[in-house]
Image (cartoon, rainbow, N blue to C red; front, side, top):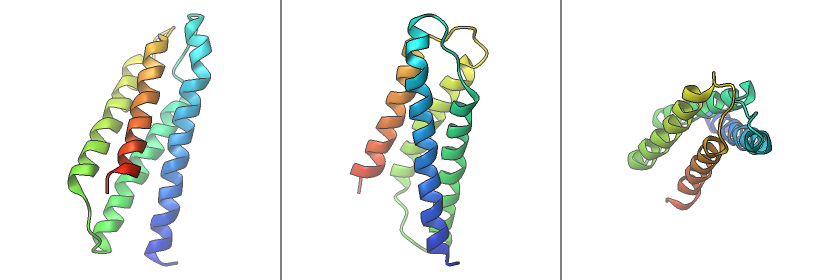
Amino acid sequence: MSMEIVKQLLIVLHIVGFGVVLGATLFQLPAAKRGVGVITTGLIHGLNTMFITGLVVVGISYTMLEPVNKAKIIIKMVVLIAMILTTLVNRKKQSVPPAVFGTIAGLGIFNVLIAVMWH
């Protein structure tokens, strides 16, 4: 299997990770509005998937001697770290406010906008 195929499969997994994050946050919004929203393990797993696959895709791009937009990658990583930290700070709380889920989802969508629109 060529490295390009591996890279493309990792990008698919990265997108799946985002889907899990967005789905988990949107699923918890109604519960959060009732005061019983929680950080789910699915949300944490989705963020881990995004983080790991993102790092590996960039690493593979470097090994394939492809041009890498360092500024774009740094900004996407900072946004993802903000999502992870927001999740970790709130994961042990009995009730997570809706704004937390909105923040995580909003940052995730912002990350997608950076990925798609910044060339």
